[in-house]
Each structure stands twice: as C-alpha cells, then as structure tokens.
Image 1: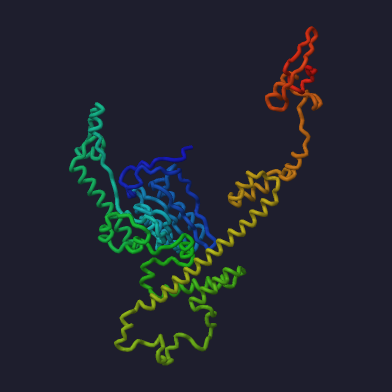
Image 2: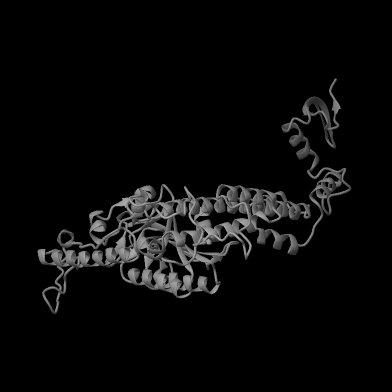
Length: 486
C-alpha cells in the first residue's frame, strides 16, 4: 500500500500556493468522536478533493462525517481543521451545506485551527459561528489560483511537433502543447476573479471578514492566528481544550443573532455557564469542585438564584428607583445613554470569564481521566508478570483498549522472575549422542589445539610414544598427557 503521495493539483484551486508538490500521507478519515461534555469533533485534514478520493480528504466525505456527527445528538460540533485547501469545485457548496445541516438540527457549529486553514479549508471553517485559532496557525489565503503551462519550447528541443486539432479557436486554451496567448490568459484571469468574488461573498455571508472589498484588499495573504483575529477572520486565540469548552457552553445562535440580541443573549450564555459550574461544584472530584467554586466566586454567582415567590423581584416597576441604583433610568443628558453596549461588554467579559473557568475545569477533568487510565494501566501490567520486557515497554504507551485486550486474551506463561531463576538453575545439556557430559565434543588433538589457541593450556616439551616410534622433545599442550622429556 502506498504510504505517501505527492499532491498533484488539477483545475481551478482554492489552495495555499505552498501546497504545490506537497508530499502527504494517505489520509484515513475517522468518524466523529463525542467528548465527555457533548461535543462531536470532526477532523478535516490535508488537501481537499471534490468527490470521495482514495488518498485525500474530500468535501463529499466531510459532509458525510458531519451528518454522522449530528446523529450523535451532540451539544455542538467542532471542525478540527488542518488543511492547505484544495479544489474550488464543491468547496463553497460544501461550506454552505455544513452550516445549513447544523442549523436545521439545532446544533452549534464551531471550528478550531491549530495549524492551518487556508483557501478552501478556510471556506469550510467559515461555516462555523465561532473560529478559535492558535497563535501560530496559518489562516487566510482567501482567493483562487489556476495555472497555464506552455511546454512548446521543450517540445521543440525534444524534436516533437505537436499539432492540436480543435473545433474552436479557444478550445486549446490552457493546453500545455499550445502557446499561451493574451486571449487565453485574459480568459483565465477573468474566471479566477469571478470565482474569487464568489469566495469573498461566501465568507461575508457567513459574517467573517467585514466586506467583499476588504477581503479583496487582503490580496489572498496568509496570516498568523493573531492577525486573523484582528482582520475579523477568527474569533479568538485559544487552545484545543478551550475550543472544546467554548463549544460545550454555546448554543446554535448565529453571530448575527448574538449581535442583534446583545446583552440578553450573552446573559443566557452566562446563565448556562453558571449552571454548568454549579453542577461541577457539587461533584465528587474535590479539585474540579474547588475550581468551579472559584469561578462562581469570580462571577459573583456563589449564591443560589432566588427561589420562586421571592418577595423582592428584580423587575418591580412600582418601586421607586433608589439614588445611585444601577437600574434607575438615566437622567436627561446622561452620557451613558449614548453607550448601550456598555452592559453588553460587561456581560461579555463575564461570559469570557465563565468560558475560561469551564476550560480550566475541562483541563482538570482530562488530567483526572489520564491519571485514572495510568493507574489502570499499571494494575493491568502488574497482573501479567509473564509479559516480556519488550512487550511491557510497548504497552506502556499503547491505547488502553489494546492493553486491556492483551492482558485478557494472551495465554499466561511463567513469570519473568520464575523464568530467570529456572534459567540459572537449569543443568546445561550436550544433546543426544554427546556422551555423559565429561567427554569432549572434539577429537583429543583438535581439542588440545583449540585449548592452546584459547589460552586454556600451555605448551611443554615431552616424549611422545607411538607403536613404532618414540620421539623426544616434542612440543605438546601441557594437558595432553605425554611424558615430559628429561
């Protein structure tokens, strides 16, 4: 199976130009995974094709994964994007369909960019009502690119004479065996400009970037995460865990609805966040409860809300406003009358504080889960002292499902310590037909020569007897048994 492939784009592209010639691994898309707080994560990776492709990700498969994520009934969907973009064909339609699918089922659609979301990948991310990015991420390249290649000079050098037969004068536009004419270039530029305008309109339709003219003025530049936030292409700088926390505490209202409803909308979000924090504060985990209580204290929400039938309702219109009462109507000429967004800003700060608190609690929750998994792993491996050290080393970093399966299904053998003791106590054997263990495996003369070479014996001068001869002063190994010469 091919593990890598060089990205060879074709047709009109919404692609970061640096992606030309990119070598990528074969992408194996995974189904949406549901986090503990009800967020379904859909990954988008690598160059993007229109139809399902055996090697690269595609708009068709991304739609299918989002549809499957919706079937999980999540609180929100998070698009985890890392892609340089891809084909224009199908990109804009896919982006609109993702937003429509989420809205139709009342599911909030968020996006996180930890590394790259450029060109067509940003078109998909723009479908989200909230885009969280890392500070070092590459965002933008909002534009379209096409390519004209003229290889007629190369054909001439090779001695090739290529004649194109067409049914019209413009049919060969873009064919590499045809010279690039001014008309062909102008037609290609017009098509690229038209598609780019469609791209700008899509992003503005999804309430990012401000206006078509502002996006056109960016000249398809690539920005870091912080620059993208300043230019209105992303919501905030955040980590992956924070993006999950934001998604778990936000409903499906679009950014326009949030802006229109102002304070009331953010107040509702704040109430949801406070409700979640109160639930965590009452949990069994002391660290999570402590963090949740600290967040409630920072939000001024330590106390339970007033019970039904409270004698002091907040909306008592008959009670005269006390002097200095914040809810009293503004006096004529009051400067705050011209600042209706002040309360919204304060509420927004509180909501951000609540989201950060929830992100901290989420981090503690993840750490607890990792600690629990580590303890389980240690207990499982301790229960199998028969595993070889090499296997134990692999299982220390393997997924927990693999560890559980191997500890349960692999046949048991003697413990490693038992094997070591048995090896030390074992009596060496010489094999069948090799005598009782005292005889040498080699003939005497060969063994003597080998012992001499190995330093196990030394030479001496001796008298050697044979049936018909007696030799004096012969050098033999000292252990050969000959009679030494006098």
